[in-house]
Length: 373
Length: 210
Image 1 (cartoon, rainbow over the protein chains, first blue to last red):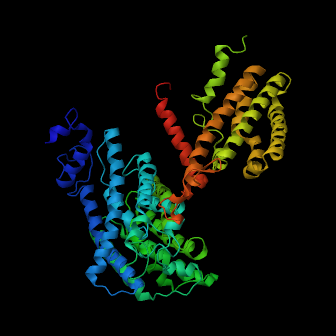
Image 2: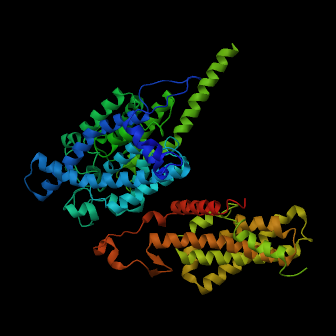
Image 3: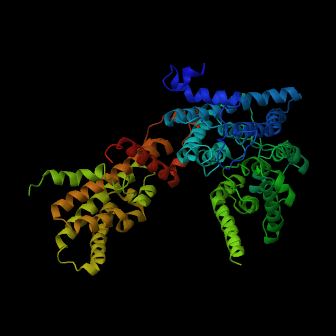
């Protein structure tokens, strides 16, 4: 079957697609060349991406259930676990399909055009995108934003591994600035009718997120337990602290995410949330800041992206600490942005190479001094 | 020397395409980002820069033998400043609303890199007629990019062209449709990306000539 797809074969136009599918389902034939210093490992990046997807599954499943739960609760109807879940599945699945179809479509087209193989990075990005949008985000807007992010945040920099910004977060940032009515406020978080999630009808059901209530100066109607379990309105995958932490354990255990970044982010966020009330800013309890909104989700799945975070161990600490601190500063001090995690991570993505540079230079200086002795 | 000789034709046509001040020399970007959120200010700005570049080029070219080399920048600035003031007042008199929209960017034409570049690089060495053609060519090359970017930004950001509604009312989400204007297009950040796209297309098309 393979020769049909190689150069000169009948279906060579789909060669990169075939190659992607082949290496996705089977272990690729080529291994690293025997000469030179290389690290040999049993898993290639397609395998490691499976682990990331597995780590996301608890948050996805909970997110689906929560869509249904919020929907039936606000309508005052009784519902079962299965019913909630199926309702959420019906909303999550179209978003996921759109995100994959658009993103992979562009990646395959570019790979074919440049005669490269399709990279696997989008499997994670494509799964993250539907998890970080509100329930009522219309599908065509999601498609536009995904296309924008894949082209301008990824392909123009050279594809997987070359991007400065996390493409999933660029998708969200684009949505946030281009279609603010669809991304914030109190109309978009809970699904009133099924068509809302397709059309994004603005007069959905009103339900503010805890952070939205805080920014608007209203009393917060959710208690700490709700925010930890995740039965609150919010972007699809971000609400449950517990589900995300299960994902974090899987990621750290598989050695894909850096525990330094995750821990650094939480420490930075906690410290800032603890200090800011002394500066006169209104605030939750400091630990509540870490469980609401996208803080945990960003720390575990976004900040740890190996491409856009620093490579040096010291850089990872600083990167995490500053993300946490910035996110809380934006949340608490800027009334225009109820949530600051997205902007904090994007900002630190820019600085990641700088942190690396400093730590590498410091190490070089240290060794130079030692050698001079 | 013939007025419309081949060399003079090149002087005029170069900046429109292969030597475009924005797309190739990447000059004048700040104003290209600032004034292109709608088509009308983009057109007015492009024309103003064209007129000012053309006449500043002519005047400097006439004076070029008498300007002492050490103070030439100041002389150039005085000439440009005088022309900018004239254009600014004309805009205020005849198209007041646009001049309000353009606000400081008309005054900032004085510091437009394209202008100073043309004066230094061309008008100081060439005769008035060539300088005039060069100024018109560069101004129009700049205006062309502004118009393209302004067109895209206005139709996607506001759903209008020159203030006329292009996208039907019923298509908008608040009227029961599906469409929403793209707020990102109204921000300068998106103009930067659009200018980059323009340069991308321009380079892809002109690959062989480089």
